[in-house]
Length: 227
Image (cartoon, rainbow, N blue to C red; front, side, top):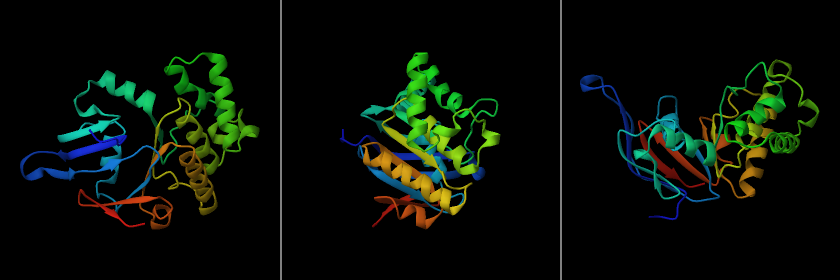
């Protein structure tokens, strides 16, 4: 096997049957190494979110293979996929997906609790992560009391709670203004500089250009661009 932290072999995803069959992803072969910073770009409906969901173990391929750290995750049970997601992958969603009744601190500690981290460690780690994204002064605030950019920075902190080796951002700047978007991308670049693999889905060419590698996708076909 390749040394890539993520390797795909003829990875494909289809929906529907017969005349209604849609080829969301077509025989994709990519290798992503530990510490890579990848942008996946393409128009709406191109297949970029499908690829992200497969890499994030949120969905299974129709055909082909997907390896994460040399493990063929395309054959794993849902319980084992959940373990991979919990231990190796941090998700940052466009719509933040914060729990509205919890504070910033509580939102960040929640995923750590699912991973079995003790309470004292959860709180200390969450405070450190919120400090990293310059939100120490907002730890007691609920999502409704935070701006969009602040909510996304809380979401980044939550994604890092279990020390993932892979950070996935699905349009992480899609719901914020340009200034907040640039700040979010600065944070992701700092995370990458610390050794984490960062993969960002975007339709914005200016965001994509900040990555070290760009995977362009259209009609389910992935090609690598020169940066």
